[in-house]
Image (cartoon, rainbow, N blue to C red):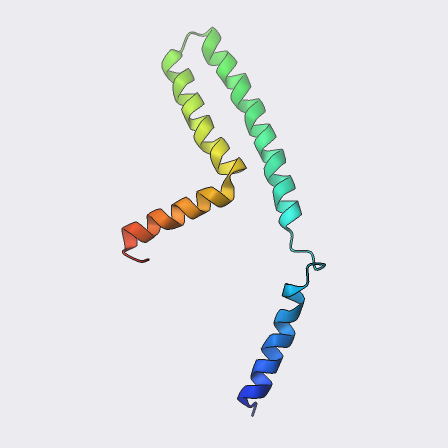
Length: 96
């Protein structure tokens, strides 16, 4: 049976690599994927906006731009968006 001291020592040993700044976390890869996805999204947004403009579909053009701003914000400011959604969920669920 493990004592509390041994258990604590094993937890510290397991958590030690997480504190090492040289251990890759995948954050750079996540940022790279988000930039690629964002650029693809912008290209699609521009092409569809041009199509709506030339067809004189003003309502769809403005709706598409509004949706594009929202999704672009989700892609490029994902950490801030997550914090806002967590705060909103906290308000709805009554948590702090």
